[in-house]
Image (cartoon, rainbow, N blue to C red):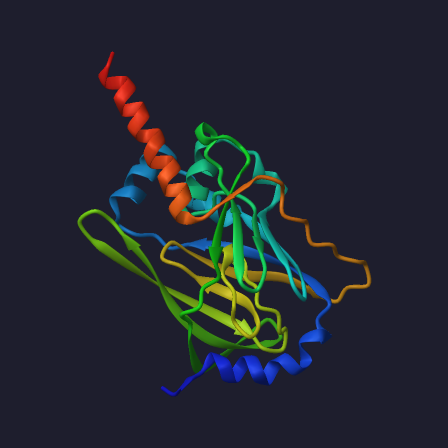
Length: 241
């Protein structure tokens, strides 16, 4: 299969970038069921979590330069086992803000405080494929990448597949993914598929992208250091008892 370069698409579609002023997308979610120990444990504690995942909707609000992604209000503050484990299943921890180059996510770890924000670079290692499919009324192109996670004894690689729409040429998508020459209308991670449910482009009613909340912005390395120190102190205090 012939692969297309990201540079070509960016140059080609940047001409009409200003045509998209703003818009919003509602994504539904379908869980990817696995035989992992984590999935088995989670379903043992919250038997209805897979059904709960299917009930979740997410909203993406964007303009030409910024985007905001969050869960629907019905389950935003729900603390039931099903909702808590459904969010863990799809790796959603809180609000996400995007620019073309950066992703900011709410660090929802109560024991560290409530005003920490994780900053990461947007995904840059996409492979673009000359493969298309129609989603809603839009022709979308396939792009793939992988997430690499390093554990003490093993490195894990998880494939990511996105279907983006050059016609809606803004570099955003669900769950903080983006940096493609078009809006991502479908995204498959190792645990879930985000699919467009409704979409509105340049509506008559003005759309405002929520601004990044105030808080301490941390890199992944800085956040890992804070978590490590917290755990070390906790273990040290426990050992003294």
